[in-house]
Amino acid sequence: MRKKFINILNVIEVMNRLEKGLTVEGALFIDSDTHQLSFKPYHKAKYQPGYYKRPKPKLIKKLPWGWLKQSVRNNILHLSVPIDLGTAHTMNIFKQSANEANNALIDMELKEFC
Figure 1 (spheres, rainbow, N blue to C red):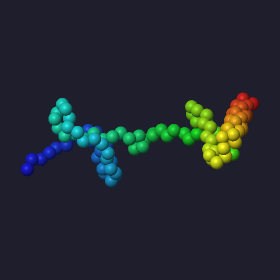
Figure 2 (figure 1 turned 120 degrees about the vertical axis):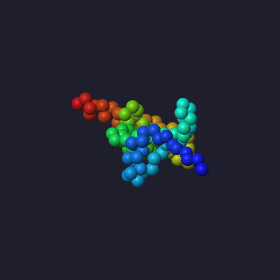
Figure 3 (figure 1 turned 135 degrees about the vertical axis):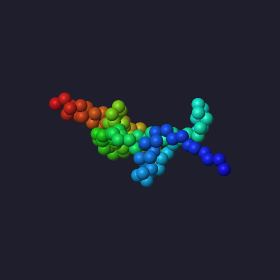
Figure 4 (figure 1 turned 60 degrees about the vertical axis):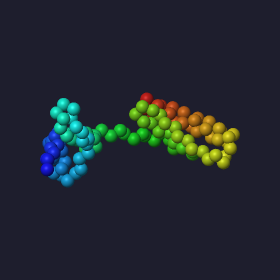
Protein backbone atom coordinates (compact mmCIF):
# COMPACT_ATOMS: atom_id res chain seq x y z
CA MET A 1 0.00 0.00 0.00
CA ARG A 2 1.39 3.35 -1.03
CA LYS A 3 0.99 6.36 1.28
CA LYS A 4 -0.14 9.65 -0.20
CA PHE A 5 0.94 12.92 1.34
CA ILE A 6 -0.90 16.19 0.98
CA ASN A 7 1.06 19.43 0.94
CA ILE A 8 -1.00 21.99 2.91
CA LEU A 9 -0.42 25.64 2.17
CA ASN A 10 -0.96 27.99 5.16
CA VAL A 11 -0.68 25.13 7.65
CA ILE A 12 -1.01 27.38 10.71
CA GLU A 13 -4.37 28.79 9.62
CA VAL A 14 -5.70 25.33 8.77
CA MET A 15 -4.57 23.82 12.08
CA ASN A 16 -6.05 26.71 14.09
CA ARG A 17 -9.43 26.17 12.44
CA LEU A 18 -9.27 22.42 12.94
CA GLU A 19 -8.39 22.83 16.64
CA LYS A 20 -11.51 24.97 17.07
CA GLY A 21 -13.60 22.23 15.46
CA LEU A 22 -14.41 24.34 12.40
CA THR A 23 -14.47 23.19 8.81
CA VAL A 24 -11.82 24.22 6.34
CA GLU A 25 -12.91 24.91 2.78
CA GLY A 26 -10.36 24.96 0.02
CA ALA A 27 -9.07 23.51 -3.20
CA LEU A 28 -7.31 20.16 -3.53
CA PHE A 29 -5.08 20.07 -6.60
CA ILE A 30 -1.87 18.64 -8.02
CA ASP A 31 0.86 21.26 -7.97
CA SER A 32 2.39 21.76 -11.41
CA ASP A 33 5.87 22.49 -10.00
CA THR A 34 6.30 19.76 -7.37
CA HIS A 35 3.72 17.28 -8.79
CA GLN A 36 2.40 16.73 -5.27
CA LEU A 37 -1.15 16.72 -4.06
CA SER A 38 -1.70 20.13 -2.45
CA PHE A 39 -4.48 21.76 -0.45
CA LYS A 40 -5.01 25.52 -0.49
CA PRO A 41 -7.58 26.94 1.96
CA TYR A 42 -9.95 29.63 0.75
CA HIS A 43 -9.55 33.06 2.28
CA LYS A 44 -13.13 33.94 3.09
CA ALA A 45 -13.60 37.40 4.47
CA LYS A 46 -16.17 36.31 7.06
CA TYR A 47 -13.52 34.29 8.90
CA GLN A 48 -10.94 37.07 9.00
CA PRO A 49 -10.85 39.72 11.72
CA GLY A 50 -11.79 43.20 10.62
CA TYR A 51 -14.29 41.94 8.06
CA TYR A 52 -15.89 44.93 6.34
CA LYS A 53 -19.65 44.84 5.98
CA ARG A 54 -21.29 47.23 3.59
CA PRO A 55 -23.70 49.55 5.43
CA LYS A 56 -27.37 49.07 4.64
CA PRO A 57 -29.12 51.85 2.72
CA LYS A 58 -30.70 54.55 4.90
CA LEU A 59 -34.45 55.03 4.57
CA ILE A 60 -35.19 58.62 3.55
CA LYS A 61 -38.96 58.40 3.07
CA LYS A 62 -41.63 55.72 3.13
CA LEU A 63 -43.92 56.21 0.14
CA PRO A 64 -47.49 54.85 -0.23
CA TRP A 65 -46.39 52.40 -2.94
CA GLY A 66 -42.73 51.90 -2.02
CA TRP A 67 -39.75 53.68 -0.46
CA LEU A 68 -36.82 56.00 -1.10
CA LYS A 69 -33.44 54.96 0.31
CA GLN A 70 -29.92 56.32 0.12
CA SER A 71 -26.94 53.99 -0.11
CA VAL A 72 -23.27 54.95 -0.11
CA ARG A 73 -23.33 55.59 -3.88
CA ASN A 74 -26.96 55.74 -5.02
CA ASN A 75 -30.40 57.04 -4.25
CA ILE A 76 -32.82 54.13 -4.63
CA LEU A 77 -36.50 54.60 -5.46
CA HIS A 78 -38.56 51.42 -5.22
CA LEU A 79 -42.20 51.30 -6.33
CA SER A 80 -44.50 48.32 -6.55
CA VAL A 81 -47.96 48.82 -8.04
CA PRO A 82 -50.51 46.04 -8.75
CA ILE A 83 -51.32 45.39 -12.41
CA ASP A 84 -55.06 45.56 -11.67
CA LEU A 85 -54.97 49.35 -11.32
CA GLY A 86 -54.51 49.96 -15.04
CA THR A 87 -51.95 51.88 -17.03
CA ALA A 88 -53.26 55.41 -16.50
CA HIS A 89 -53.58 55.00 -12.73
CA THR A 90 -50.15 53.36 -12.54
CA MET A 91 -48.52 56.20 -14.48
CA ASN A 92 -50.17 58.71 -12.14
CA ILE A 93 -48.84 56.83 -9.09
CA PHE A 94 -45.33 56.81 -10.60
CA LYS A 95 -45.43 60.59 -11.20
CA GLN A 96 -46.71 61.32 -7.69
CA SER A 97 -44.13 59.02 -6.10
CA ALA A 98 -41.31 60.59 -8.12
CA ASN A 99 -42.43 64.07 -7.05
CA GLU A 100 -42.60 62.99 -3.39
CA ALA A 101 -39.12 61.44 -3.68
CA ASN A 102 -37.74 64.63 -5.23
CA ASN A 103 -39.23 66.71 -2.43
CA ALA A 104 -37.80 64.35 0.18
CA LEU A 105 -34.31 64.68 -1.34
CA ILE A 106 -34.60 68.47 -1.35
CA ASP A 107 -35.75 68.48 2.29
CA MET A 108 -32.86 66.21 3.25
CA GLU A 109 -30.30 68.54 1.63
CA LEU A 110 -31.85 71.58 3.26
CA LYS A 111 -31.60 69.91 6.68
CA GLU A 112 -27.91 69.13 6.07
CA PHE A 113 -26.96 72.70 5.09
CA CYS A 114 -29.12 74.58 7.60
